[in-house]
Image 1 (cartoon, rainbow, N blue to C red):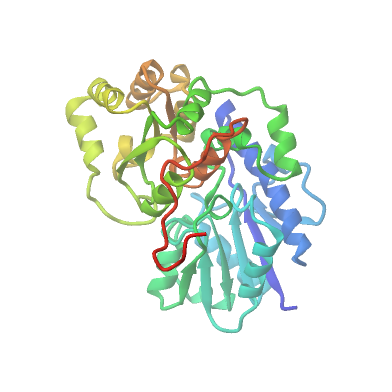
Image 2: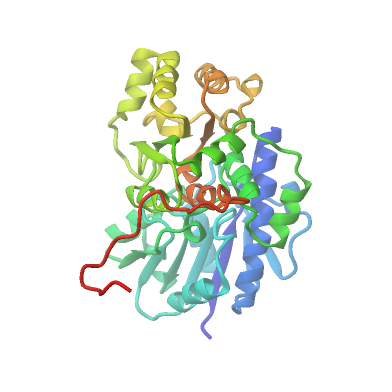
Length: 380
């Protein structure tokens, strides 16, 4: 077996309660991920984090903590190259903490075998916004100008001529704990390994609209709107697994990985017509909505601090200092239809889990649309 470096990046967090929630959820998820990595023969696993992070004080057995260099600001690419220089691995498995927690042993074995290949290459969970990746011939990365964050890693490697591919879209490949909404979705789906289940079991956390939204997904008479960076393929997959009708306002894809300066149409409309008009129109058009707020509220501009974004996801306007995000969250909370706010994962991997969770305790046929009929096959 070749020497493969398995590394989990666990970023530092702020001090708000919502930020601590996400931090601790990511760390719990990473413990389940590390257990699967060890199960396919990858140990020790490196946890790249800040040693003063409370969540790293009790590391998993056989997990080696690599302290984040005291750069300001933190640079993902340079830190990754530091590790490659120090360890000189044949291949690399990279995970952001909170990603990969639903991967099975067979999937992880596939990623390990891919990283062992002699030919250069990379496979991503999401080429357009990387959360985890397997890279063969890892030394090739040392000559590249790697990005400050992991999202555009696929673009950088592809532009350098490295063959890149992506895993099929599913909850296992796309779900990532990146916001409090992701923690809530994972909880209602009852998915994950023992560490994250123990973490979720200790939480006293509810969302006023999530139960109602789940009911809508299994209701043939309902209409749910998806807003934000949903992939059309994901939307197609989800439509086949839920009963309600859906519509989509899909914008902002690649906003963290790309360099476009084009403003999303919805962001412009929100600026020009105001938040009350947006929610009035949305409430008259559908029975509920899942909203990726980042492209809607920020366009191509900078995001507010995580404390504000995460408080918005939890519908806690009293904890938000940014006036725009505070007003938007207040309007979402007051809307006459159930609203789920979140980030990219809410309209990506989270949708797959919501489609599973909505059928708990229900026996109705899952499909809104009948199965396709094969004209070339005799009816049975």
